[in-house]
Length: 407
Picture 1 (cartoon, rainbow, N blue to C red):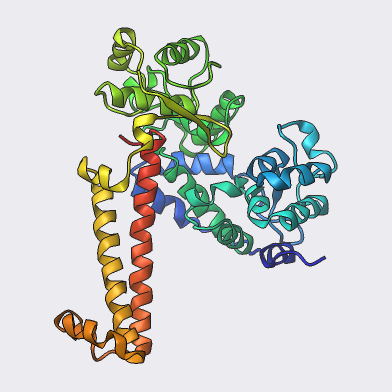
Picture 2 (picture 1 turned 135 degrees about the vertical axis):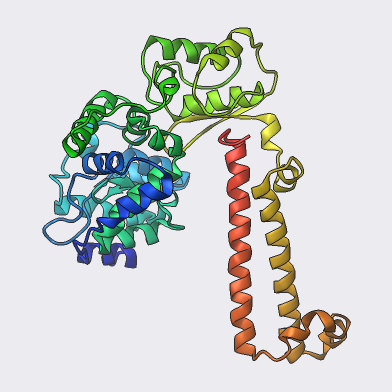
């Protein structure tokens, strides 16, 4: 059977073991965090092999993720083929063998044959075992580009992992050395204490010093990575105030989003940390009246989207003072106008119908009159790419606003 070109490329085993030790120091300087803290995280979380004995990526297909990402018409077929299941279970890994086994590649190949995009997004890859659906947070526009980069270079594994931490909204946590918050975001619930101990041990090995949270106020507050009865009481209070989340005693990303939304609604700093001001506001708050839409993220977390936010657009955010929205609207508009002018110039060369329109805007396009057709095409391509990037940044800003990540 012929698989997709991306899968065939990965299965060929092009991996090169060429880790870049400079990446950590450069990232630490960029973020403003302790380089040894970043090294300790990377050593523990990326402690595995990048490639197997055949120079293929270390992979692990996840049936429950595949089931969630598949288009509905394909789910029944995937379940019949035993490639997907609605829920996670240890049984999902039956028959896969150990790390580097051919069985893992066989299963991923079948998943990719059914739906390439969903299949590639439903496996974890490389040293840090980053899920394919996190390709955007690792700096890649497509999952295909993500897995191809990891498949050819070990250095890409480290830079992708660092990008994931940066793009997961963990800047403050990295600067404050809040290891529990980082572990909760990356490893999920259930193993926070275990991985926290490992990272603290590795940090002590590197520095001969103990690892503590730099911000004492943060350390004393409920925050990402906190667990237990106090978190459960916080979650119950938020649900009583009509913020939608699970009451499970685990302060994960969904709880942080609810806290950020509460803080934004009550004029507090939207940092997701339950300090004294937020605690006081929770006591005196009354239930919100907004209708909400409950959605699921790819990771399975519940997200409550207030009705007011579902109607927000890029232009409305621009009017509210968002600099990102303003730059996106202006950049997209300017780019679209440039593409339109360039298109008219090209059309005028092949059709007399557009000559009158060209004459009317002659002063505006005079600087481009001496360009060859190839050069003009190249210029239009650059303008189109920049316009797309502006549009993409604006779309991400609107989505973050809807999900409560920004105010």
